[in-house]
Image (tube, rainbow, N blue to C red; front, side, top):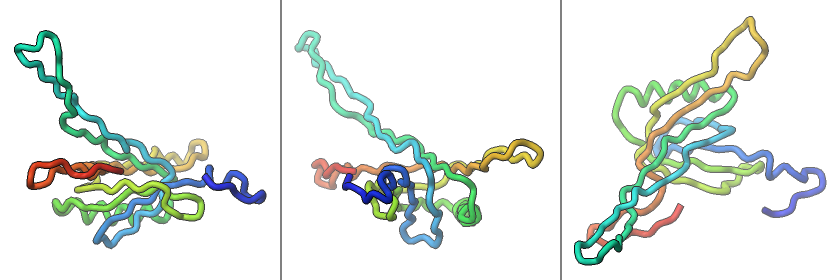
Length: 163
């Protein structure tokens, strides 16, 4: 990280947030305070030839991505999310886009380009007018088919990988 001025010594480390970009979409879903599920695992494939004793060859198998969960305090952008949910619930059209971690100046730090994503859940914390004051937290869950550029080419060779 680059150094900051004395007036904002910790601004760059404390003001990161996430932005969901939808390609060819009509909706700006706003900023999100937290994101989880940006992870990938590979199922190991083991192969043991009959004539090699106990030697086992291990190769990376199928890629598995977790669902992404975004959270923030409910805000004016929450109504835009509701309109987006209505439009996506009427048809099966997977979207492409990205989740970006942006800094306090809204400059992208890291981008995860999502392939074929769609919403699979939305919730808001329990609202209770008679209880203690709490911030109403909105959570959006997205399913996707990946963020690594690791498809195999038509010729059978491996594609490039990266995040």
